[in-house]
Amino acid sequence: MIQALVAGLTIGIGSGAAPGPLMGLAITTTMRSGLAAGMRIAIAPLFSDAIIIGLSLTLVAQLPNVGIQILGVIGAIVVAFFGVETLLSARKALPPMSADEVIHRKHLDRYPVLLQGALINLLNPAPWIFWVTAGSTLLVNFWRENPASAVGFLITFYLMLIGVKVVLVVALAATRHRMSTKTYRSILVGSGVLLLVAAVILLATHVL
Image (cartoon, rainbow, N blue to C red):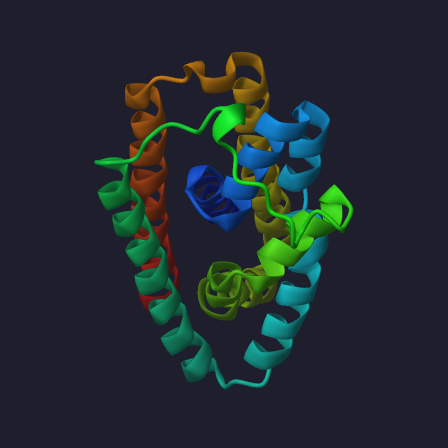
């Protein structure tokens, strides 16, 4: 159970703070339309990820044990790649833009804000890659060990993933464009480090 909670904690926080299409949409929506709209974008994975997780588990459930183990190792490499990518991007990353610089997404504005977030998340390959490799294999392994561990991992992961996005959206709504470059880059560095820690945990789960 402890390993499941630590995995959910590290991956959730690291993924929640990492830059990506959903975070970008949450930032621009907050700047343009305010805190409430940004919060709806931040919680979108709670709805869209159900589809991704369901399809991923259906696929992984068909694999033999050795296949799940190999896929889990690939998942660890994927998470490590996300971590390294986040660390590299932190070197030149600029803090979130101000409301005046927000790009208007006309092709999304026809939809409700929550649906915009769900669509962006579904069209982003990163959640699919994570859940087909690391996420689903972790869930399967934790479930076989103890169903409570699988549930604990899932709850902890989404509490951290959504919680970090909500905190960032609230901070942006309060400060607008006043977040310093140093602070923003520090957040990304922390995210990258946590993802690397999570990759080690994943590797240990499937190899040891």
